[in-house]
Image 1: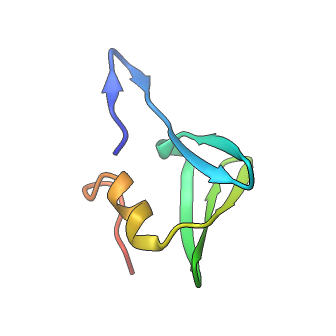
Image 2: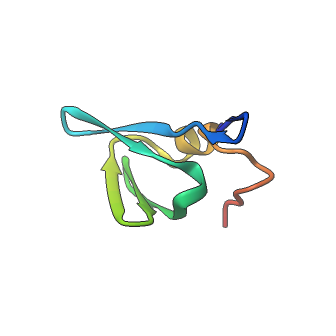
Length: 68
């Protein structure tokens, strides 16, 4: 879950290949499940990571994101 501390947005980090990609939660447009992977589409970037959708869902604030 993203935290806001004194007006600063704390991002989440997703592993893509051998590197970690920083994604600001407030920039996420949608998340798509692709078997054992998820595709996170944010402003200006797309990250595909080997996680299931439930694991990513736990990182996000349920008041801000819904699963459909």
